[in-house]
Length: 416
Ligand SMILES: [Zn+2]
Image (cartoon, rainbow, N blue to C red; front, side, top):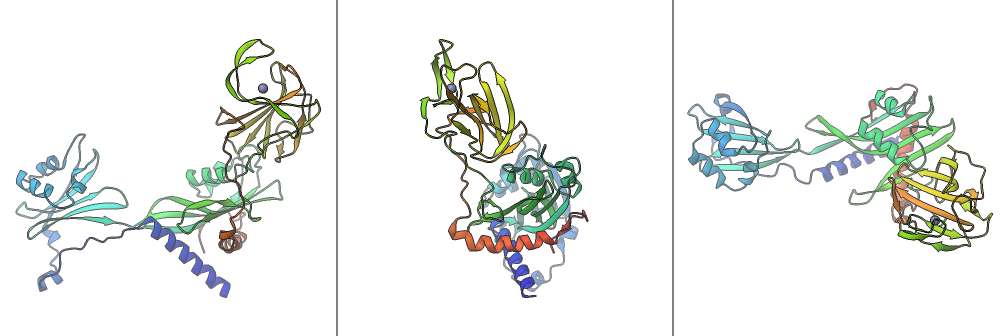
């Protein structure tokens, strides 16, 4: 019982935090002060007003819009001289103004919904116009979804009510551990707890994923829990062992050898006797020296080429590729296999175009070559000490909630 209360209160707190950060301002601009009895009980004058919708044309303006409903230039000028008038004069084609006139064709009110979160409003007062900002707070709801993967993760997620954005976010969070296209099998369960954002009860979009769990191959459990700092800024996602879901790379794929050629846009090729770019780093060392995978990933190519000799390509987290060339022989890992950082994938040799035994190593990000010795690796450290307590509490609560989700019922539900 106590646990449940704690559970609920932490969530209410979380929701408040999220809401507070989204909406630093609420409706703060005061309405004109109430001066007499008649104002206390207004006779809903708006009933007698006439409301019109005017859409701003390309290169249109406020004065043009007001002119369309018969407001004279003097009134328009008076508006432009009022405080905050820039809120109403900086209009974009396609914006809609709602304009209220009374029965004598006097301008009473303008409503300009700039965004879903921010509206501007002009009100006629006794001595001119008052222009106000109305800010609608974003409300955050925490929702859950779970299901079994059938055919593709994308379609299975969609079938459980997940948005494209949340499906992509999930794939991104787990991209160092799971290949969503090739690795997931039919029947693998997934569970996710995430935020949805609403303004005035209307769904806007999905927010952060708070926690997720995917089980691959029947027993391999992958978890992710969101960690934020005190300013509500995301630090990262960590698993149930407090490990970062992002992984760093080893700087060098071989030990105890020396760098014989660095990354250069252009260099003289010793075999071809030509000036060529060198898009990797060469490590000279004795034939048979073990070569290690510099990061967790999947072997996407393992073959022999005229230039590279025996070569292995490893893909990491979708966007990184490392290349290991001129091997004397491959290790025991085959194409398509997932490997852990540091595992031996082959041995130094001089197959292909090589003037002596060495490893030619390349690092690519989104298909572009990067100097492996200079590339900045993602921060992959575990949960920082100062956030440890907070993380343990949060991930504990989330784990409890995840365990209550039944992927077999396949019903997306609101957070309980
Ligand atoms: Zn090289």
